[in-house]
Amino acid sequence: MATFFKSRSVQLSILGLFFLIVFVPYFINIPQLEWLTTKLMIIAAVTNAFTIAIAVYSQWKRSGRFIREKRRGWAYHIYLLLLMAFMVFNGIVLGQDSTGYQWLLQAVVTPLSSVIYGILAFYMASAGARAFRARSPHAALLLIAGFVVLLYQAPLTGAFFPGFEPAADYLTKTFGMSVSRMFSISVCIGAIVLGVRMLTGKEVAFLGFGEE
Amino acid sequence: MTKEEGFDLFRWMATYDKRWIYVILFIVVLYPLMRPVGMPITVSELTRDYYDQINSLKEGDIVFDSWNMEFSGYMELKPGVLATHRIFIEKGVKLCIAFGHFEGVAIPDVVFSELRSVMQEYDYRELDDYIILGYILPNEAAVAALAQDFHGVVRQDWKGNPIEGTFLDQITNAGDFAMINDYTTGLATTFEVRHMVLTYGTPMVVNCIGVSIPGALANLDAGLYTGLLASTRGGAELEYLIGAPGPGLKSMDAFTFGHYMLIIFIIIGNIGHYGWARRTRYRDRTGIR
Image (tube, one colour):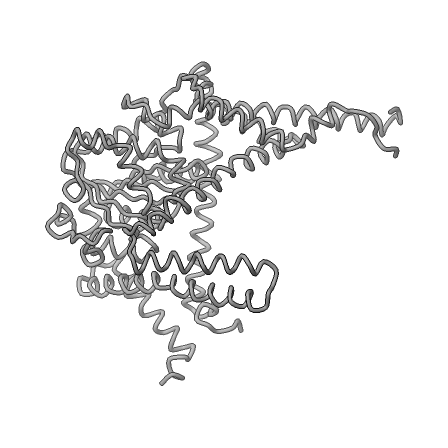
């Protein structure tokens, strides 16, 4: 039985069947399928959420190996495991309303998260200031466009020089938006191609099979 | 080629130490936060449209309030979050709050403590007027299931109170929400577009961080969003529009000085680059140093 379910063609058939159950109701109204579709979505959501348990287990094993073999930075892994255990204990055993969990979030996680985000401003300013060089006519055009948008973004400029707003608006809604659309369309086409390759058995790594 | 000697101003301008940027940016941002100047601000069409969308909601309308942000992202979106919720509270809009990140659990206390006075004024209470469902948008399947069968997925709020018997009884699927209001750093937003907006036609307004604006503008132009509030600047504009100054307007001085500083550093770098390159070509051509 196990061999049967491990077979590549059986797994692909199951995949194709479930794909159709979820995919078809988007285009054809079949009330009988809706209940099944919703149940499948809920099962997928719950299964997906449980992957966090696998992540915790994998991290535990990986860090354990680091500590046992005394690899570089092994002490940090002890710290990581202790904090992870403390967070899991507070979150699961005592609940997310508990003082311990809330303290960890409010006093440790959130300030660190804000600091990391704040530091990015310095890196971005530094990278922007040093990378924007008019080394070629193309780069000069990019620089001019960047200048207009940057000046418009500073609230004071808009208040004293209203002419910047239509210029920045034009650049954002034409060049900026076309690039953004191109990116979105490319990602979408890539996802469709990947989906088709998975359904037709050309991409089987996600099923645990090696590339053929 | 001999080694260049002495101080070359152009070379310094082209290759200045990045730590100068860090130090000056720190001063330029910190000073106006400590001593606000109160610079004028203009309100963009984008923010006006967003305000019109929010303002069109009626008392008792139920909004799916999606907090797709980590705490770090909240720091950028804070002005928009506070100003928008102030409007919701004043209008008596009912909120169904869901998180797209586990750090979202830490944000309600911060938001509602800032709005305590207006909540008391309008007698706005948890479970009667707003319900926090917690971290229920971890992946696309969860959003899709929630959109199709709301009560099949969620039966209690984040504190374990049953949602049965509350205003959420009126919701069966995503089409029953009057609006989706999404504060996002880019987590479950696209899932909501696919499974709530495209499937049920629920209007969606978005308050996004700066780097997401170009992508969000394309979605706005395509009609997937009906309103867009752009980052801290948009939040500050909304504060100005509703006459409720807050953290956004306070930060606009630092915002302005920071932008101008960056422009000055870009100009310095380019003058240095041009001058240094020109001088180097001249030296190579003539051999004069």
